[in-house]
Structures are given as structure tokens and as C-alpha cells.
Image 1 (tube, one colour):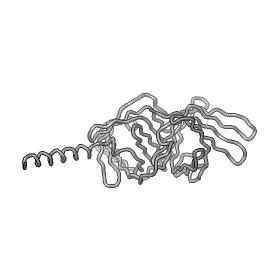
Image 2 (cartoon, helix red, strand yellow):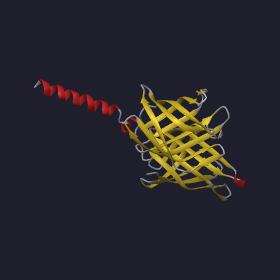
Image 3 (cartoon, helix red, strand yellow):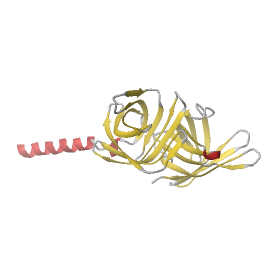
Image 4 (cartoon, one colour):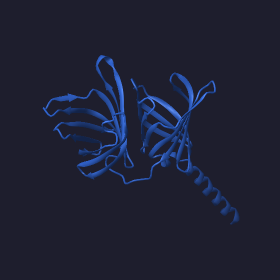
Length: 263
């Protein structure tokens, strides 16, 4: 009887340890970057503690948006992820930074250490400004909030603005948006004239007002006109995988953005 009990205890311990490494259960959430460290092959180490970055892990996808206050450079990335023990693999499908974007899929293997306030991630080999480097990031997790129908990662399929004079301008861009745990983010690549490209982003809090409206409060953005402001947005959601948002302005102009859920 004693041997049976001992075996049972061992099984419980093993099961408990395996659950502690089940990142698929632990990672979904919203995380604020607190410190980024870049280690280069020549031994140089650079710490960044003033980057404004929010990262979202849903059940299957991830997205991050960032702005560097030092030079106003914006960046974002989006994709899916898989887990195996303490390793998380990000299957990146799109990134954009400054005046460049990359739509070629690439995988990054991250060693994850769950901490008391969030997690630490290590990428042992990543190209940063053309130099193979080691990247270490520390994140704080925000408290959980109720689920909403918008939770997930979305890609804009069509967007346009209508002026007060009823002139319509179709947006020439690639845009992604994510909602999770009471936070939202957007990132886009604008295609301007003469093959010029620019990256824009924003993130903040959101809440559902009703089935047909939600509210966003921007905390950080590459656009000063929206940073710190709150917007009430009209919502149409014909099914769980599509939605249209409309933002109306005081002068009678408005913008329309149509999205499809990433799967």
C-alpha cells in the first residue's frame, strides 16, 4: 500500500510539473514590455527601458506594437504560435518597422520563463539591424478582464474615409488589429507616393458599450492626434469572424474599416 501511494504521489508531481510548463495555458494575456536587452557577438550589451510596447497572446495568435520615444520609430508584428515545454515558437507572417515591411513567413524560437509578474523571453539568434544578436525581453502581465466578441487578431480587408463633402479615399495600407483582455492595438503599413512606406501603430484600452458600439482609449500611438484620446466606435458584426467599425467625426466625416479574423 505504501508503494502504491508513493507512485501516486510521484505521478501527481510529474503531472504538476508538466502543467507548469504548459505555455499554451499560461501565455494568453496582455503584456507590457519593461526591459529589452540586445547582446551582440562582440560582447556589446544595450538595454532599452523606455520602449512603449504592448504584446498580446490570444489562444493561438500573437501581435505586438511598439514605438520608440527616442526617435519615434514605430513597429509591429503578427502571427500564430505553438508551444513545447518552456519553448514558444512564433510563426511570424508580417512585420513592419519604420520605412520597411516583411511579409515573408519566419519562425522565432523563444525560451520562456514565467515570472511572478509576467514572463521573460529569450531569442538566442535574431537579426537586429543586420547583426545576429541575442534578444532578452521582460514583460509585466495586466490583470484579466471579461471576454468580448472582438477578442482575437484581425486583418483589415478594406478601409476608406469619407470627407464632409462626401469624397471617398480608399486607404492604401496593410493593417492588423488585435483585441484581448480589455486592450486593443493596431499596426499598419502605409503605401505612399513614390514607393514611400511608413509604419503606424497605436494601443490602449477598450470596452464594449453595447452590441453595436465599443470605446477605445489610446495610450500610445505614432499619431499624436489620437494618443491619449477616447473614441466611440460604431460596430457591425454579422458573424464571429467579421466586423466593420465606423468612426464618425464632428465635422461629418467618417472612416470605415472592415476586418476578418485570423485563424
